[in-house]
Length: 80
View 1: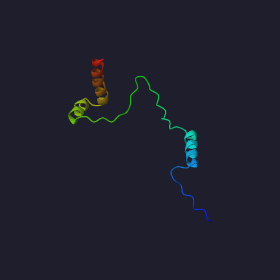
View 2 (view 1 turned 90 degrees about the vertical axis):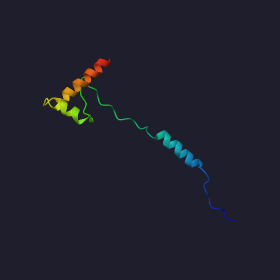
View 3 (view 1 turned 180 degrees about the horizontal axis):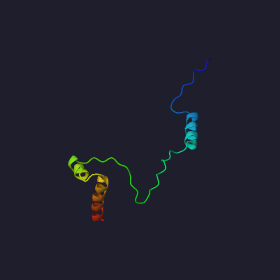
View 4 (view 1 turned 60 degrees about the horizontal axis):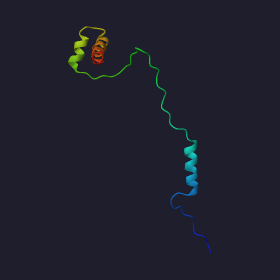
């Protein structure tokens, strides 16, 4: 009498063993290292502000980004 073909039902012992081996040998995903923080350093960002606000700070010519930074710093320091 011929043996019926083997059919998988659910997960086999081999599948379970392979999954256990994979989880034991796979390196966990590590977050990329953080960039060193320089005290008093600046970071480049994109900021959306109203056109009128931008024009106000740019009227003084070069250094308008520093003026925006100074104005924001005053607000932060006032809340501390």
